[in-house]
Amino acid sequence: MGVVYEAEALSGPERFAIKILDREWTRDTSVVARFAREGRAATAAASEHIVRVLDGGTEAGCPYLVMELLQGEDLGKRLRRQRTLPIDESVHILEQILQGLSAAHRQRVVHRDLKPDNVLLVEQGADPCFAKIVDFGMSKIERPAGGTAPVVLTRRGLVLGTPLYMSPEQARAAPDLDARSDLYSAGAILFECLAGRPPQVGPTYEQILIAICTSDAPDVRRYRPEVSRELAAFVAKALGREPDTRFQTADAMLEALALVARAPAADPRVLRRRARARMIVAAVVAMLVGALVTLLAVALVGK
Image (cartoon, rainbow, N blue to C red; front, side, top):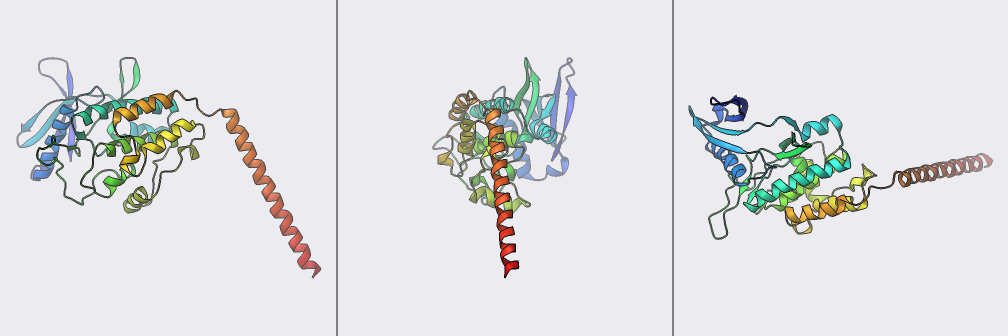
């Protein structure tokens, strides 16, 4: 719906990113309002793990946002290139995502479109994998208790967002979506970092939504056996189908992650022994089946 330019300040060498809404969308008042809301949401949810919006306005009828210029790679691109990430790196990225969500949720901002493509990894200080959440264009801004209705700018019953990382309640287009929906999406991102695929997949948009609403996420160890039992349980809780079964706040999820991060990964020697045991069992079963087929064949010939 728009384009992002790299810009240089007239007064000095500092550089910025300027996001401009495409002119053809300026006639759609809901899109213009959503664009403006992105700036308000990102500004309200001030955190080092959320892209900074520095200014905004309208020029020649086109809304624009001035943001910090970030040089890096989004998590989606990295996963498409590497498929999976090391376990400690995956945990580190999730910690930073949760810190950003904690700041956003304190300001009653729900992102609603958290996905790997909206997590930018940059080099900052001594950290080569510093995560920043971007694109609050679909965010929901809650009003204080007793105030007016939430600012959502979507029709009731309309499903928005990326289905692979969408919470069940968002897939059902629930009107009372809250911050726990973002926590589900964060869990889905961690699942993909570890497993190399999202928790629910399908050939069509609709089938993915149905799976999210009706099926529990698989055990991440099915795809990454070396993940510790504690971390696998953490992922399963984050992906609970009902909001009440998940972590209730980003801070609570962050505390739980700090505990499971210290749990050792499964011992590779144990994994190798389990793999050998499975191979032996499979071989024995194959031998027994072969013997049974031979005995049946002999018996039929004897008749």
